[in-house]
Amino acid sequence: MSRWGPLLITLLIQAMASMALLTLPVMAPVAAKALAVSPALVGLFIAISYGGALMSTLLAGATVARLGPIRVSQFCLLICASGLLLCAVPWLPAVFMGAVLIGWGYGPITPASSHLLARTTPPHQMSLVFSVKQTGVPLGGMMAGVIVPLLLLNFNWQVSLVIVAAACMVCALFAQSLRVEFDADRQVGQSFRLGSFAQPIRLVFAHRALATMAGCSFGFSMVQLSLSTYLVTYLYDDLSYGLVGAGVALSFTQAGGVIGRVAWGYVADRWLGASQTLALLGGLMALSALATAFLTANTPQVWVWVILTIFGASAIGWNGIYLAEVARQAPKGKASMATGGTLAFTYLGVVVGAPVFGAMSSFFGTYRAGFLALMIAAAVCGVVLLLNQRITADATH
Image 1 (cartoon, rainbow, N blue to C red):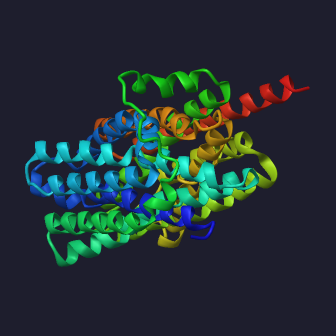
Image 2: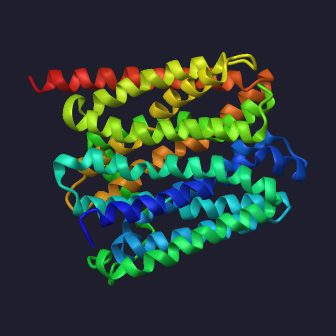
């Protein structure tokens, strides 16, 4: 396969996993009524999913080394599909168990792709290639935002979940033809030990650059997933949007993320570098969260789309730069382990952030309070990154 093969297959797998994760949040207003619960509980669903992802990503380094990135990705898609099927059972404990499975499936996919891309990407193209691959996350979000509401117009929410699960299975089957080529470096004799959980964390704390990226990702992930999780419900409940209209608005944030990931990757490679680009994105996230909090039902739709596109470009656009920097700073052959270690902090940000967003929104009686909290989190991260960049620059002079 061409040198673009690893990028294309990892992009497709990432998009399907992202769609699986966001399918239930997009249909939250409908599913919540059927389950007789508040739509705000979608934050707990996301937190549980990422709690599962946090655990599984810590084992990704050893698992990828033994089975290969394609085989791991196939297993992950099948686990996500199983979680979606469990979510279709109209019983709240089953839905939350489905969330755990989706998280277990979602967690190792990024470390697996980082292992493959770190092996096949020239160093001077790392930020751009990783950013293009990470467009799979907002692409999956766009698919969820557009396809899921359309499925709900023709089927009930349970059948819609089954259809998305079937798509994940088809993607896993498609990847089989690529396994021999891309899993050629697997180490069949690699063993699994309890220490495998701690090893990625130790690796992160042993390298200042990795620890900085991990801390940055904690705050930014709070912003990203709260936006993706609650935007549809915010527009539906607070701004009186229809479900399809709110889904389209979510797609604008995801489209902004797709464009942003590629554009920011190019900017980081050519001009600003990773830390300065991430600090800039922190500022844009903060301003966008503030603007989103002050949207009203009378705000012209075109302005809503513009604000949400910019919000998506920053809040969803940072991941590729971060992952490329992690792979670049990781010791040779340790890209998947370093990625798994830093992603544990990324997922922890989601586990903490989504429930806090939901709790604040419930306490104040509006989702606007949650977006104001995101503004503060993003601003703090931007300032820390800017100060760290100056300290690093002073140390080199």
